[in-house]
Figure 1 (cartoon, rainbow, N blue to C red):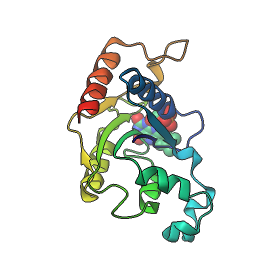
Figure 2 (figure 1 turned 30 degrees about the vertical axis):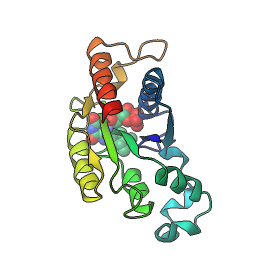
Figure 3 (figure 1 turned 180 degrees about the horizontal axis):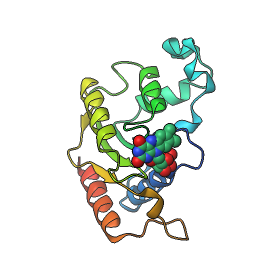
Figure 4 (figure 1 turned 90 degrees about the vertical axis):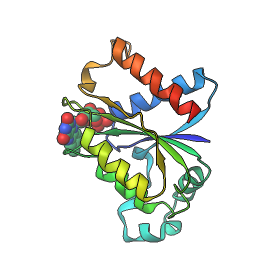
Length: 174
Ligand SMILES: Cc1cc2nc3c(=O)[nH]c(=O)nc-3n(C[C@H](O)[C@H](O)[C@H](O)COP(=O)(O)O)c2cc1C
């Protein structure tokens, strides 16, 4: 199973829109996937009970999804020069090491600034490798994300469409 992690809990995020775009592109290539938006994490995720996450109501379906996933796509916005804290809270709540060990991931960074979360994607790569989650070498960075969608809410820029297509095709083979 493939799961796309929309790695923020910010309402109406661009991250979720990009995650939906990746899901559609995968579908067009015959690959079904699920989106896990971190906006849908249980509120108690920041309670001390998170370290015994089986005690948090509504956590188990998320753990079951992660346990059943072989390949991940993380769509990750830049918050204060790195990835959002909620992503690390989520990773820390997942069972270790079985949730990610021996599995594969592709990473997509985005930002309103001009670097497309290069540093956050580097930070996340280090954490993935610590967890024995193999990261695909072709990572994507989408800066100026607020200028990427047309009036119909679709990605339209030639370069973005070209590079996302390359990454998604490579991910299917990965
Ligand atoms: C808490 C927070 C911190 C942010 N820090 C940065 C930043 O360091 N660099 C940047 O280019 N954009 C920053 N942004 C803007 C995000 O890149 C912007 O919200 C963008 O739309 C992608 O995130 P989204 O999925 O939340 O929409 C920040 C946004 C938030 C909410």
